[in-house]
Amino acid sequence: MLRAWLELARISNLPTVWTNVAAGWLVMGGGWDARLGWLLLAGSLLYTGGMILNDAADVKFDREHRRERPIPSGRVRCDVAWIVGLLMLWAGMRVAVSWGGGANVWTVAALVVAILFYDLYHKPWSGAVWVMGACRTLLVLMAASALGDPAAGDGDPAEGAVLRHALGLGAYIVGLTLVARAESAPGGVSPLARIFARMLLLAPALLALAAVLGAPTRLVPTIGLVLLFLVWTEGCLRLIRRGGPAIGRAVGWLLAGIPLVDALAVGQVSLPLAAGFVALAPLLRLWQRWIAAT
Image (cartoon, rainbow, N blue to C red; front, top):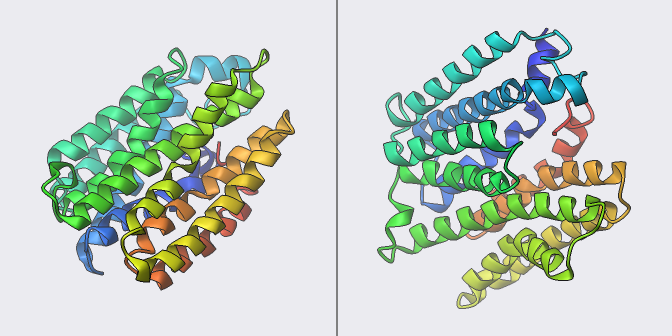
C-alpha cells in the first residue's frame, strides 16, 4: 500500500522541490530559520497533492494504456486519491501562507491554480507543458515571496536574481519535455523547433552567465557550475537521440538534474551549498531506480 502511494506521488522527484524552494529562499537572502522549514513542507504538500491528482485525473487514459499505475491496478481507489490530493493542496496553501511560511497569498494561489489546471488539461492540450514550467517558476517565487516580491521589478538585485532563476527553471522544465517530444515525434519536427527546445533547456546556464558578466569574482565558479550543467544535459541529449526507451531514461536524468539548475543560482550566494545541490543530482537518479520519476 505504501509503495503504491509513493508511486502515485512520484516521490523520487520530491527532493527537486526542496532544492527549488531552498534556491528561491537563499537567493532572496533568507537564512536558516523555521520559515524555510515551513516553506519546504508547503512545497512538499503542494507537489505531492498535485502528483496524486495528476493520476486521479488521468484514470481513464491509464486504464487503457498504463494499467500498472496504482489507480487502474486497484492498489489505490480513485475517489480516495481525489480526496487526499485536494486535502494536500489545501494544507500546502495554508502552511505556505498562514501556518509559518509567510508566503504571498496571491503567489501561492497562482501556484495552486497552475497545478490544478495542468492536472486537468495536460492530456487534451499539448500546450499545458508551459503550465508545468510555470508550476516550477511559481514554486521558486513562492519561497522568495516570504522575504520580498521578486515580481515587483523595483531594482533589488536579490529580487532580480530570483526572478531570473525562476524563469530559467521554468524554461528548463518546458525544454526537457519539448526536446523529448521532438525526438519521439513519428514524423519529426522542424530544425527551428528543435533549436527552440534546446535553447529553453539551456536557458538556466545562459541566464547564470549573463548574471555574473559584471562580477569577476563570481565568474570562474559560475563557469564551473555551467560546465557541469552542460556536460549533464549533453549526455542526456545524446541518450534522447537514441530514441525508443532511451528517451524515457533521458527524461529521468534531466529531472534528476533539476538540482543542478538550482545550483547555478545558489552558487552566486554560497559555493558549498551549490556543491551540495550538485551532489544530489546523481543520488536522485539512483532513487529513480526504486520509484520511477515519470
